[in-house]
Image (cartoon, rainbow, N blue to C red; front, side, top):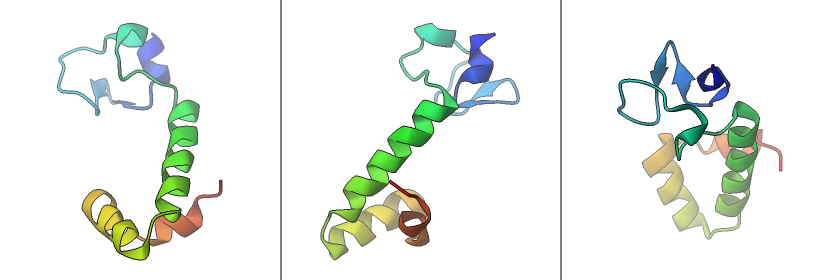
Length: 75
């Protein structure tokens, strides 16, 4: 039951892909919740380094304009 350790596994379904059944560790999107959180920190760190217009554009497009997410995540 490795799928239960995947960041995208919720209520028996994969939230990252449209598949009927989780493929487990063989899935190219498989990663633990801890690894996904660490990668998210790196993403926010990179976004913070961008110019203000690019930063706002990305946060609007992918994060619903929640600029506070950049402040809430420590690197």
